[in-house]
Amino acid sequence: MRLAVADDVRPDYLSGLPGGVEVVRFPLEGAPGPEVLAAEFVVPTRRPMAEALERMPNLRVVQTISAGVDWVLPFVPEGVTLADARGVHDVAVSEWVLTALLVATKRVPELVERQGAAAWDGGFRPGELWGQTVLILGYGSIGRAVEARLAPFGVRVLRLARRPRAGVRTLEAMPELLPHADAVVLLLPLTPATRGLVDAAFLERMKPGALLVNAGRGALVDTGALLEALRAGRVRAALDVTDPEPLPQDHPLWRAPGVWITPHLAGSSPRLRARGFALVRAQVARYLRGAPLFNVVREGY
Figure 1 (cartoon, rainbow, N blue to C red):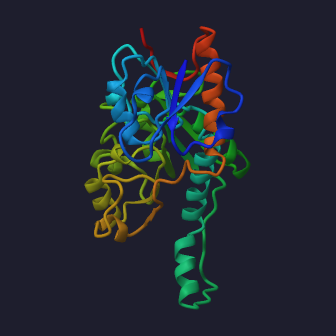
Figure 2 (cartoon, one colour):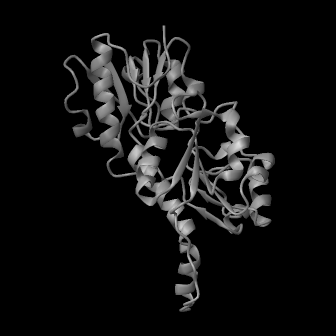
Figure 3 (cartoon, helix red, strand yellow):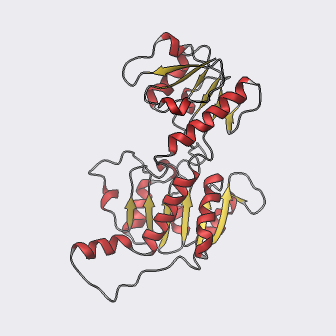
């Protein structure tokens, strides 16, 4: 079996692959050669690899090392199995969410400004997470990791997902729960149904002064509606993803009041690729012995 990976994947990440697997490398620059286009199993890690999938006649499996697959799904041919990296990003993203909640609650940006002005303000009063209610939209493996990290802080967690299960309600309960949440954490995938989910009506239903935390996809949020709500002081926001992305330097979201922005790095970690390719090795082994794959988003023929 031929496995295609990016040219910059470290050899040690591929150590331990089953016998009979030929690794071919997609070049960082230039077009892929015929040996790459003949691959049966592909791990796309950047857009040119995704765009090449439709030119691979032997392709059977596409395995991402990203939790979201919206960027690659349009290029995956019919009949090809697509699997995501559910679980790989749990640690990094959940730590970022916890950081965002603490940064907002402890009013860290304001403290940094005061330090820059050499202003010692003994009357400054940060908040605390204890007793707050956090609503998680998209309660999957990352949501569970977020809840585990919030548990020592005495936070009440409300859980919503696209499919109901024990302790988890569907998105239909969102209008009822939004007014009770001190923070709303977005972890949903981007689909036609979730695009623009956070619109003006959503933001109006949020508790006054509540925090919107987006670690999912930028297009889950109507940026214009969010800007209006921020400027009116109705909500605050911590955003790792934006729409558009990258956010242009002159975009008004950079200067909006009550917003903290990071450049789509919540899932980044020095350990990300090691975790991701441990999953790849396991998936290749399962594929070769005919076992069902983990994390299948769309089943092939």
